[in-house]
Image (spheres, rainbow, N blue to C red):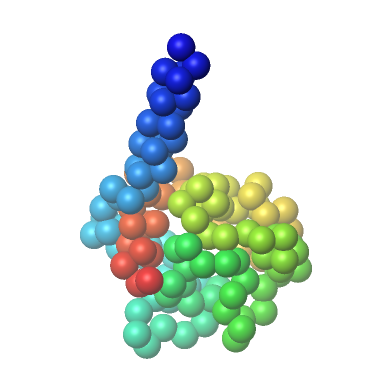
Length: 126
Protein backbone atom coordinates (compact mmCIF):
# COMPACT_ATOMS: atom_id res chain seq x y z
CA UNK A 1 0.00 0.00 0.00
CA UNK A 2 2.78 2.44 0.94
CA UNK A 3 4.65 1.60 -2.29
CA UNK A 4 1.47 2.42 -4.25
CA UNK A 5 1.09 5.80 -2.51
CA UNK A 6 4.77 6.65 -3.03
CA UNK A 7 4.56 5.65 -6.71
CA UNK A 8 1.47 7.80 -7.17
CA UNK A 9 3.19 10.73 -5.46
CA UNK A 10 6.25 10.32 -7.68
CA UNK A 11 4.07 10.34 -10.81
CA UNK A 12 2.26 13.48 -9.64
CA UNK A 13 5.55 15.26 -8.95
CA UNK A 14 6.88 14.25 -12.36
CA UNK A 15 3.74 15.45 -14.11
CA UNK A 16 3.73 18.75 -12.23
CA UNK A 17 7.40 19.38 -12.96
CA UNK A 18 6.99 18.76 -16.68
CA UNK A 19 3.95 21.01 -17.09
CA UNK A 20 6.01 24.11 -17.74
CA UNK A 21 8.21 22.38 -20.28
CA UNK A 22 5.05 22.11 -22.35
CA UNK A 23 4.43 25.86 -22.49
CA UNK A 24 4.18 27.42 -25.95
CA UNK A 25 7.26 29.52 -26.71
CA UNK A 26 5.52 31.31 -29.60
CA UNK A 27 2.70 32.42 -27.31
CA UNK A 28 5.30 33.25 -24.67
CA UNK A 29 7.02 35.62 -27.10
CA UNK A 30 3.77 37.58 -27.37
CA UNK A 31 3.31 37.68 -23.59
CA UNK A 32 6.96 38.74 -23.19
CA UNK A 33 6.05 42.05 -24.87
CA UNK A 34 4.83 43.06 -21.38
CA UNK A 35 8.40 42.53 -20.14
CA UNK A 36 10.29 44.27 -22.96
CA UNK A 37 10.14 47.73 -21.41
CA UNK A 38 12.53 46.51 -18.71
CA UNK A 39 14.13 43.28 -19.98
CA UNK A 40 15.78 42.05 -23.18
CA UNK A 41 16.66 38.66 -24.66
CA UNK A 42 18.60 37.60 -27.72
CA UNK A 43 22.08 38.05 -29.19
CA UNK A 44 22.15 41.84 -28.95
CA UNK A 45 20.36 42.07 -25.59
CA UNK A 46 21.55 44.70 -23.13
CA UNK A 47 20.57 45.40 -19.54
CA UNK A 48 17.78 47.92 -19.14
CA UNK A 49 15.92 48.73 -15.93
CA UNK A 50 16.02 44.94 -15.47
CA UNK A 51 18.76 42.49 -16.43
CA UNK A 52 19.14 40.61 -19.70
CA UNK A 53 17.24 37.33 -19.37
CA UNK A 54 19.34 35.12 -21.66
CA UNK A 55 20.08 31.87 -19.84
CA UNK A 56 17.81 32.73 -16.90
CA UNK A 57 15.93 29.40 -16.78
CA UNK A 58 17.90 27.12 -14.47
CA UNK A 59 20.42 29.83 -13.55
CA UNK A 60 21.30 31.02 -10.07
CA UNK A 61 19.53 34.28 -9.20
CA UNK A 62 21.58 37.46 -9.37
CA UNK A 63 24.17 35.95 -11.70
CA UNK A 64 24.54 38.86 -14.16
CA UNK A 65 27.72 40.64 -13.02
CA UNK A 66 26.83 43.76 -15.01
CA UNK A 67 23.52 44.38 -13.24
CA UNK A 68 22.83 45.94 -9.83
CA UNK A 69 20.17 43.78 -8.19
CA UNK A 70 17.99 44.81 -5.26
CA UNK A 71 19.27 43.93 -1.81
CA UNK A 72 16.27 41.61 -1.43
CA UNK A 73 17.12 39.60 -4.54
CA UNK A 74 20.81 39.58 -3.66
CA UNK A 75 19.98 38.11 -0.26
CA UNK A 76 17.84 35.37 -1.81
CA UNK A 77 20.59 34.69 -4.34
CA UNK A 78 23.09 34.30 -1.50
CA UNK A 79 20.70 31.78 0.07
CA UNK A 80 20.81 29.72 -3.14
CA UNK A 81 17.79 30.85 -5.17
CA UNK A 82 17.81 29.27 -8.62
CA UNK A 83 15.43 30.37 -11.37
CA UNK A 84 13.79 27.01 -12.03
CA UNK A 85 10.21 26.52 -13.24
CA UNK A 86 8.79 26.71 -9.73
CA UNK A 87 10.60 29.86 -8.60
CA UNK A 88 10.04 31.62 -11.93
CA UNK A 89 6.34 30.77 -11.75
CA UNK A 90 6.01 32.21 -8.25
CA UNK A 91 8.02 35.30 -9.14
CA UNK A 92 6.25 35.99 -12.43
CA UNK A 93 2.85 35.54 -10.79
CA UNK A 94 3.46 37.98 -7.91
CA UNK A 95 7.00 39.38 -7.85
CA UNK A 96 6.53 41.46 -4.70
CA UNK A 97 5.13 38.48 -2.78
CA UNK A 98 7.97 36.19 -3.84
CA UNK A 99 10.77 38.69 -3.14
CA UNK A 100 9.75 41.22 -0.52
CA UNK A 101 11.64 44.40 -1.39
CA UNK A 102 12.22 43.65 -5.07
CA UNK A 103 12.81 46.64 -7.36
CA UNK A 104 10.61 45.01 -10.01
CA UNK A 105 7.45 47.10 -10.31
CA UNK A 106 5.56 44.62 -12.53
CA UNK A 107 2.36 43.39 -10.83
CA UNK A 108 2.63 39.88 -12.27
CA UNK A 109 1.05 37.61 -14.84
CA UNK A 110 -2.52 36.63 -13.97
CA UNK A 111 -2.95 33.63 -16.25
CA UNK A 112 -1.12 30.39 -15.49
CA UNK A 113 -0.81 29.71 -19.23
CA UNK A 114 0.94 33.07 -19.75
CA UNK A 115 3.49 32.19 -17.09
CA UNK A 116 4.10 28.74 -18.59
CA UNK A 117 4.45 30.24 -22.05
CA UNK A 118 6.88 32.97 -20.96
CA UNK A 119 9.05 30.39 -19.23
CA UNK A 120 9.00 28.26 -22.41
CA UNK A 121 9.99 31.35 -24.43
CA UNK A 122 12.80 32.28 -22.04
CA UNK A 123 14.04 28.68 -22.22
CA UNK A 124 14.76 29.18 -25.92
CA UNK A 125 17.53 31.63 -24.90
CA UNK A 126 19.47 29.15 -22.73
